[in-house]
Image (tube, rainbow, N blue to C red; front, top):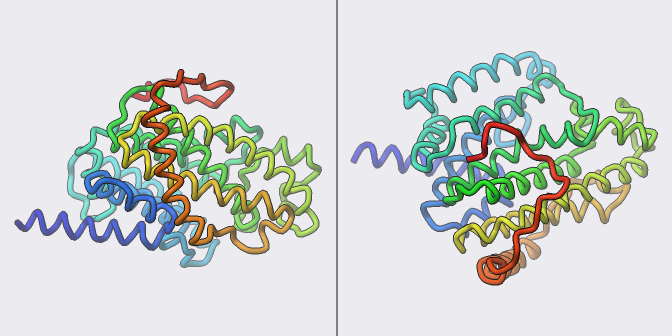
Length: 322
């Protein structure tokens, strides 16, 4: 009974983390069946905790002086790696986020390599990595978001490699959208994700990216990034057919709401970064209906359609996605 109460308290904390940390994902998660929803909460809590530790934030909100944060990042990353390893080895670490990770990995057979691949993505941020070309950026997007798609795919019962690649593609699309929305704020914080080759072609000096005088040219670069995101969204959509209906519905809602963010950024052009792009509540509600329609179509008509190849999309090499 004590163990059950402890598990319940852990779940409550994880549910609160996603409610406060991401309204878009929290809304979509409610569509999952109870077991999948619980696992999504557990996984999100660990991802959110690690992200906050690296950035010196609490649920996505900065809490300290940026210079002090930067100086402690490497030490915090090493701590996250150690605690993650111990949690996956079944050891008690006394931290709810890592208890959540250990529980969801054990219950759903998530390959242990995935959490460490996510931490490798955080290491790229700690190192201040710059990305020369699109392929370099896509590798980063895989590590910080594509691998989350893979872990959630395992939670939803997906094991087939083609479907797993679609899950990673959707994660990459979400991250490209996130970069487009936050590109100016990231630049002010000393982070640059846009391919350096693209900035050179647009005549933008990396150190001047956030200047108001560059907004028109920056808008062109970001539209190019969002065009790439569309290709990965399209690939991710084809993975819906491999999911149980409620899981396909939840994923379609999350995908639809997040893609709307990119559409808002695109439509605003040079004014895209005057205010943070936020999806209105009416559109979120609309996606509850549209997402269900997409899920039903994927689970019925989609199953009879021939699988389209993943043409010219970034693909992680070995080890296998299985």
